[in-house]
Amino acid sequence: MSGAEKKLLIVEDDPGLQSQLRWSFEDYEVSVAEDRESAIAQLRRTEPAVVTLDLGLPPDPGGVSEGFATLETILSLAPGTKVIVVTGHNDRNNAVRAIGMGAYDFYEKPIDPDLLSLVVERATRLYNLEQENRRLATSMSSSPLEGIIAASPQMLRVCRTVEKLAPTDVSTLILGESGTGKEAIVKALHSLSARAERRLVAINCAAIPENLLESELFGYEKGAFTGATRTTPGKIETAEGGVLFLDEVGDLPLALQAKLLRFLQERVIERVGGRREIPVDVRVVCATHRDLRQMIAEQTFREDLYYRINEATINIPPLRERDGDVVLLARWFLQRFATQLKRPVKGFSQRALEVLEAYDWPGNVRELENRIKRAVIMADGPQVTEQDLELETQETEQEPFNLREVREQAEYRAVLRALSFSENNVSHTAEMLGITRPTLYNLLKKYNITI
Image (cartoon, rainbow, N blue to C red; front, side, top):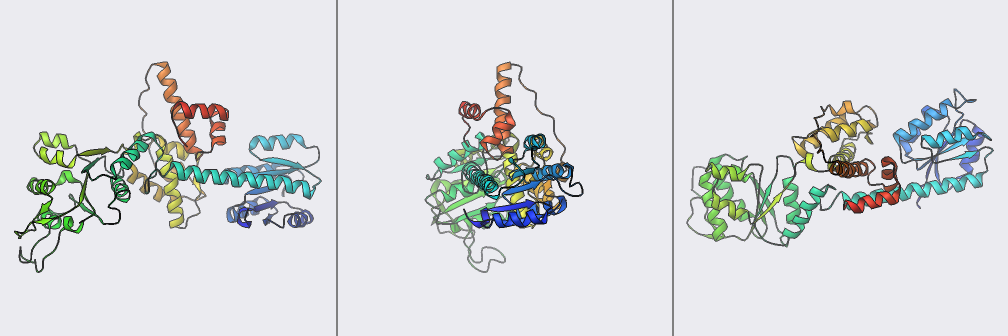
């Protein structure tokens, strides 16, 4: 265990005891505080694994009010930190009260440095074990594919589909609302394919004016039009050997749909103003938020092109239909933006998490990302609050009347929610649900939930 992992905060107002405890923990990175204000400041600065806390702190050294207030604040700011409460001799009532509030253990005065060292060492090991378990759980469950943060069954099914389609060269159509992460799925398809060493070339069909889109896709010969001073390859040629991603393919003009269809059938292109056929080897991946079948019925999208680009389909569910992913993504964005923006924000308040879950997220992951970035900037303390998010919760859908269905749906959602709130810590999840660890493992097996 490295020194960086063995951080200890001693909260004690007696200078003699401070020196004695410092000497007893030479193997630790020790910081000392003498009152509540300095204790919280040191907690934020050093982020210790273990805190030893004397309940008798000024301005109430003969009582316990300041000690309990300090304990409550520590557990709120750093719930994973192990707090060992130091009590007076035969002060069992306050020791039991502290354990009930969430303290890890208690120790009675007079202090025996050897015995206290054993308690602190045990607490430190448990803290580091929980941290490692949390890191492993997060890496296993939140990143099923590179660049994709998800743990919901709905998105895990999408990821399994990506893994199966990636090694093939079939033309793939990705469907989903705006902001659901279609581009992330395309990048995952590319990185897992045999074409990963070659380029992924993307073009947004809705972002380029119709009169320029053809030359962007197919390139042009010198002199093909005013301003064409040199021969320029298009996006399709540029993607040779790699993957061509046509985003918002539903916005492709009908005239270009016919030309794209010919390319997909023949795998050759002709530049604007050219006559020479150029063979191109690319895998084509398309994405759109539009209803292409409805567009076919309205004759604004070619049916033959639809079947050409739709050899395989990936449907990405909206964020509101991904069980547990909102909290998971929110935590990931918070950590990223807190680091990027150099903000001292560590997490969300309980109410903020509940509001995040209740909101409908019409803008999906993109809206969530922007909302968390703003909240990190606006937060005054170490936690993002409900007020920082500025969200209005939505009405929930009506539950079914069948009691077995209601019970199982509620049970399933409660387990997923608790796992998200506890960051996949089994002990914490079982505690939140009010069940034993074996019962939780049975529920995970019953609902096929992996962590």
